[in-house]
Length: 317
Image (tube, rainbow, N blue to C red; front, side, top):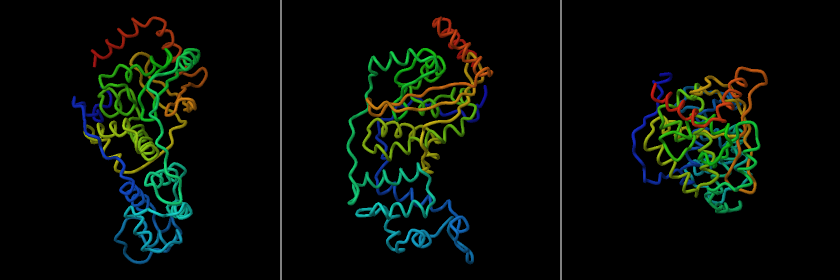
C-alpha cells in the first residue's frame, strides 16, 4: 500500500465535543505571535544586535514597525483588541508582512471580537444543505468533473464525472463525505493524494481561514472538534495558525481505477447559496491525465461495474 507511513488514524470514535476553535482574543493573540516568530530582523530591514532569546522579531520591534507603543502592542498580542482601529490593524499587517489571506484573517478575527470602529460580523444564515434543482441540472450539463461543497468541505453534490473522480471520498466510511474528514481520518487518503503532506497543510489553512470568517458556524466548529480529537496530524497543523484562500491550483490524484492524474481546478462561489462553492477540474489537452479522465467518463455510463471495480480495489488493499 502506498503512503502507509502517513496513513491517518482511523479509530471509529464520533466526537460530540464542540471544540473551542475561536475565542477571538485567544486566536488573535496566537496569530500575531506566530506571524511575529517567522520574521527575522533582516527580513524586516532591522539591524541585529547581540544574542537574541526570541525566534523572529521582538514585540518592541513589531511595535516600532507598526508605529504603535510597545505596551499597546503587548496588549494586542494578549488579545486585548477592543477599540483597536482598522488603521492599526493595517499597520500590523504591513509590519508582519502578511499576505492577502493572512491580512483578511486578522480583520476577520478582529470583527469577530466585536471591537469598536469596525462593523460587527453578521450572523449569516446556515449554508444550504440541499442543492437547488437548477444547480444540479447545471452540474449535470458540465462536461468537466464538477463538485459542489460547503465552506467547511462537505461534498454536497456532483455531476457523474465529479462523483466518479472523487469516489474514494464519496464512498469513504468516514461520513458525511468531507474533504478534511477523508484526508485526516481515512487510511485510503495518502494513496489517493500523492502530495498528502502539502494537501493536508493547505486544507487546515483553508479551514483556519473559514473559522476566522465564520466563528459561529456550528458545523465548522463540530468538524474541527472531531478532527482535533482524532488526528494528531490535524492538531499539529491547526496549531500553526496558517491560513490560505482556496480558489485555484493544481492537484495530483491516484485514482483506484484510472491511476495517476494531474488536474487544475478553479473554485467559484454560488452567490445565491450562501456558503456553497463549485469546484471544476480540468486536465491539459492530449495529456495522460486527459486520457485518464476520458476513460473514467466511459465508466460513468455503467455505474454498477464502476462500483464493483471500486469495491474490488478496496478488497485488494
